[in-house]
Length: 218
Image (cartoon, rainbow, N blue to C red; front, side):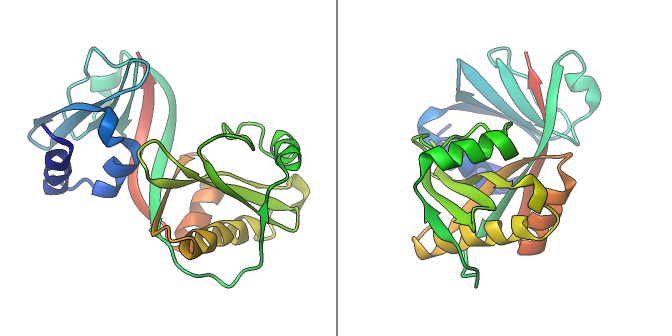
């Protein structure tokens, strides 16, 4: 199956194509298996990573890790180690009236993230970063271009003593505004399901849910 055929099929069974286009790079797509309302996708990733959808997806023996929709019956994944739960969201970029700066001080970025968001997997000099955006040295975030070619938001962080004041919403708007002015038309992000404040913020801005997943190791 070719990648464009995969996109046609996922749309037929109600999966948003944006989700696939972001998380499955075309040049690393290996194959896909359909069965009724279920789908299993394999992509290259140390050595293979899977995404499984529907009520009865095939769990491929080649996968070293995979994400499965949370609506999939638990008995299908019962023997695998649950690593966490995450949600995928996306939004079409647009203009926002918010003041921000482009940040190029990598030392400041890394110190800020280490102090206020140590769990972030992104750091200042990571190659996928397109731009770092900051608001008054109190909140920052990155726009990244993933291996799929899609753009995602990463490392959105607010200083601990400034949380609860709306800065998370403002920095997210700033990132969307910068992307829009840079010619980027769509942004996606992944967020841990337990991070309810962040999810509420994204929804209030206009992010649309693309999928809800459990992540497993094999």
